[in-house]
Image (cartoon, rainbow, N blue to C red; front, side):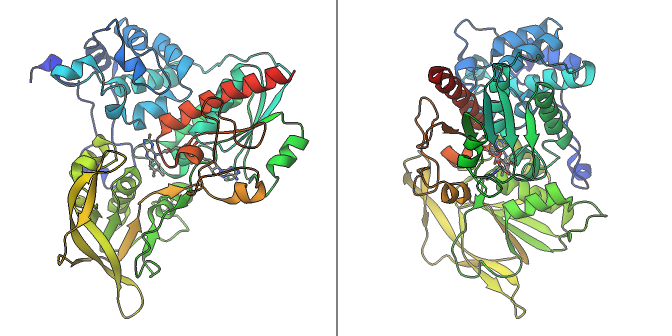
Length: 462
Ligand SMILES: Cc1cc2nc3c(=O)[nH]c(=O)nc-3n(C[C@H](O)[C@H](O)[C@H](O)COP(=O)(O)OP(=O)(O)OC[C@H]3O[C@@H](n4cnc5c(N)ncnc54)[C@H](O)[C@@H]3O)c2cc1C
């Protein structure tokens, strides 16, 4: 493939070196690489990439500014539609969104839209003083539950309209999954902190260690004078395999493992949380969570790491780039393999994962081909530690405290698709708590839509 049909490669840390630490793997473009990649954009009149972006970023516009040597202007354009460009430039599944419909992809590789977004956001952070515009107060108060991408985006939008916004966060750190889920080698934590600080500068108040539904209920927040509430509390409750042996010592959810890494610094020598001294680790699942757990295990554990996934590589929901990075880092992948039980040693610790071979049948409702068990194919994969990463659902705490919030069988809150309002008047919701575990940008899009719904609700009440 000639040069113009290929994405400008982004420098990365060497696989052999990067597995010894938690420094960021992808190093980003410099000005020359960014200019070269920006020059590949055809600036198409019908702009399919903009329609492919869940928050409708003016993609040709910001790329044109980079082309013209104005990364600061590109950042301003990005911020008009996206509260978290440095985050999205790093973790968005661009290959399924803006880059999927890029005209360049018809005959070669798409423009590296995510890489350019990251370049502009990083350039701003390292070259410019952060002075976000502060909008004059409109005299109305709104509460936001949760400081993940949905909550932060909703707060940002509302602050921009003049609302006095308070974000209530259950944990001691802000950022949601961006902080306690995604590991620092994919998303350094100072980047999330910077974005939260920008929000503070816009006048948003953030209260940590405040569990809505326990510290105070939604009804009490309303009594305190908040005229509307946005719930962006995510989907933090792990799903289990429900197979024999799942409660053995040494079997964890990947979410717990990642939280220990991210919030309790389990990867540092001076950490109080125990490091993993396993010799054979199995991770069950094929999404970003499974990949992140496997790559963390590779960095802190002594032994081999194997991912067991019941479909084939093509169906893996994880970002392509992360699958590639995991393979480069020596993580083994066993595709078309499904665990049926965890085996135990005499001390009651996991000693292996009983698996069966699978084959793919017809596509299911989501369009992915259904995995079907091949009879008589059971085999054991040795393992003294296993992490389960097969999905999450919303925590029922808020619904139990406020029963007028209606939810689906899986616990996802029901909302009006247009306004984002739940079944409780004045209470809106969006992100993983509505959609189930999804993506950062979809959570942000939902936060943005709900902010418009909240604004219309409060203005119509006047
Ligand atoms: C390990 C991992 C890797 C991922 N990788 C990617 C990726 O590469 N790309 C991508 O696009 N997506 C990825 N995702 C998915 C993405 O992070 C989520 O879809 C997104 O964070 C959802 O945003 P949210 O704001 O709805 O919820 P969250 O990010 O979960 O934030 C919810 C916040 O609400 C707080 N909260 C919960 N209950 C309460 C309460 N009662 N009171 C107060 N606060 C509360 C939580 O503590 C949390 O801070 C990943 C997810 C995980 C777990």
